[in-house]
Image 1 (cartoon, rainbow, N blue to C red):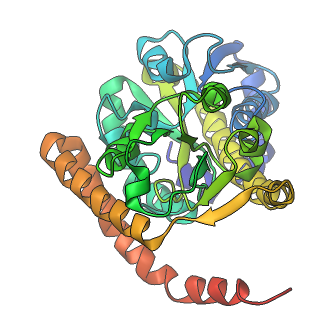
Image 2: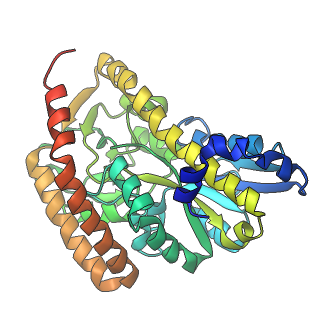
Length: 360
């Protein structure tokens, strides 16, 4: 069932009001397992999977339960797609760009450098060709996807030393969230490192890495990065609006009743909306507290941003040549983004720039 149709004709309240729960009660109980890529202490990004599971249980009257397992509990954080593909678990909650190494096209389902913001990404997925194209691609892995949240534009990360120019990046060992941004950064001399969220602090503390990015103030404060890397840069130009996804084993989903399929779709919407709202609500106060603790909040220089943009376009050309799936999806993504940027430049851009210039 198409999510847009579900929301348009019934919505979550309508699903319940239409008497779905009694119909589900007559069915056999369903038990699934969900493997997360995230550590349990992060109540925003990990917590979205619990929000989803709780919604499924409530809508089904307790007849459909999904147990949520933190990264590393059932399988490595970056092994969850293999787990879903092989049927070891019915579903996972992760960021698609973690699996860039399998095929560059995975990254487009989450975020690419200088890509779309959260609202634009949602528009492409729901009312453009995004979800259709991505699910055609994920079908090669026996999976389908639903949005599992978004963080909004992320921060650029924590650095032991200031980075004012591109020359300052050369030789820098930096934890980065996906292989795509790693390739872009490598063109500027950075040595990218792939480290799960729960292991970043130790790597920074020991000096194994010189810098690291994670999400934003609320999560970053919880993980304590300010204690070992005091320079906090923005923006995370590689994650303007990263979508976190639920990947579901296709055979497991097809085996569900129509009612349970509708419940899964509705519950993913609950989780996706809730995650972004939580980040928007909690990041401002966390940033205030970090600044109060003497964190040095710094913007990336225009020189670094310009060089990063140029390097990103080079990587995109390379991906066009080596992955037909990337080339097809990226062309649609970029065409949609051009129109979004043109529109946001008008009302949204003018309103936001004015509001940011005044004192409330």
